[in-house]
Length: 355
Image (cartoon, rainbow, N blue to C red; front, side, top):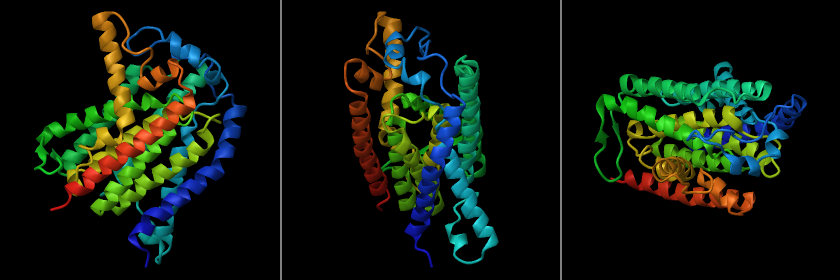
């Protein structure tokens, strides 16, 4: 008989091993294809202006380091899921207990991961083949918003989710408004995905966030959801092994879109559906993503109102880089902050379940 913890740990270990094995092959393919930007920098920022400081900071690495490294994450994760699902259907003993693919807990996160991966991959392919910046921001937001609407409707109509959990208090009932709320959260998380800008930053931050949600789901008794989150965390750690400075490849859109969409599903699945507060603690657990969104919005608003910048560059991790912090210092401090914020969020989520 396999223990509950092993049902989470074994798939996550397999995902990490698959990622480590697959990475050299992926890197070889990406370098041979010269799958990097044809022109360094962003060119145009979110506010519509130029990004000269960012472009100067990243003028060399972006045109020599391949994109689409996020393939490693979702390919390793999906391969792990497929492996255990197939084994469970062909063998009667041992394997069924390790299968974490099911309608109740993981179908939606898997769907979001896959759709985000494909949409992000299209964007990346356009970027490296045409050099036109890929899909427009409006199209990418449209894709993410549509997925958020569909998933929000599914949670509301199919799973009966009408409220979000509040620590030490009654859940906040939203009724059908849970659908647009879900969509806004999904869009916000995707916006936070712009944290992918320094070697090792996004990989480290997102792996920690998914680890925390694996703990929250496990505490809820959602073993399949915990296994899914742990598999994503381990696959991301395998990516991080090769993304630590100097990065072999960047996560880029196919990774960040897939992961942020999956994270939205995991957060809501670990909320009132399981009697927990997964959404409430999301801004804390994902504090670096929250900071990315808030500082970007503040920068845009500040420039509109006061006609000058609040930060040298936004999001704020590039501000620290611009004022002279080494990129490795920014990255590692972000890891530390994410761990501390994650522990705090996990503590709140676990305590909130105490009668």
